[in-house]
Length: 319
Image (cartoon, rainbow, N blue to C red; front, top):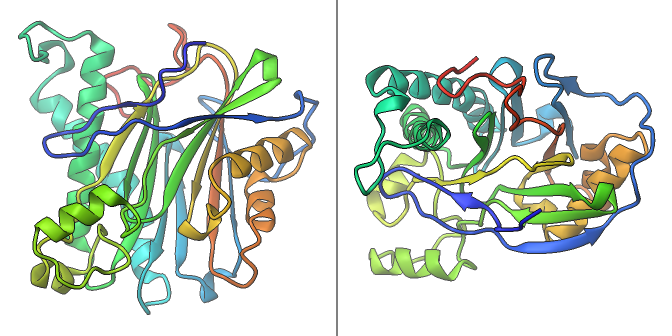
């Protein structure tokens, strides 16, 4: 399988970036026992969620919308006890589906053109439409939230690819099986928008932000953005193509679950799934967060989602 990293596409000013590539060894697949979690009946996609604290003591939330193959994770950076994160996680999948449907109704896929004026193939037109829908959805969600800053990452699984939209410091990494499961490749599908990100730091300083906060992009936080124009809610939007063979493991996690890098979480999740354990719970446990507030989601995508007989909706459909 060719490893071109992650293909990124975004609307207007959305930042384009390419994920890094790494290898992590994993044991070969073994018959999995029954696992707790959800399953999208149409596609066979499985998803698992875990947290380090009970919901009432956590500022992190996750949400799954099976009909749309949409999965969101959000963490609040304030004192509202997770109310803003809950609102964002629940709203983003619905807002994205609505924006995609509106966009397709206004500009059908068969009239999309590329930079050279030539008509785009249906799959590439769908990719453009999803990228725009994700940017629109994050903007609308930002308008609906109040003063609580929220980091969020959203995954949409469509026939044309896996779409990751992120803002803030929640992150996503994709693991892909190869060599009949003997190898799992690891691609970073997001970058944290914080002061450790050189490009982000330069951007906010160029915008005149004097005191640099820990998180440089977020949903909500109206007063902070009004007083410091360099703080924005514009997400990164990344598209990863479905592999020709092998399963995909999509990991969504709060910022404190990545302190040991991107490869180990993928290894832990894949190993746990193959052994019949919940991959999200294994990740949270092995990350060593202790009493810190953390939340994780792990999606397991079956092979064949890019085939002509893919069970996923057609390019122009939402459900």
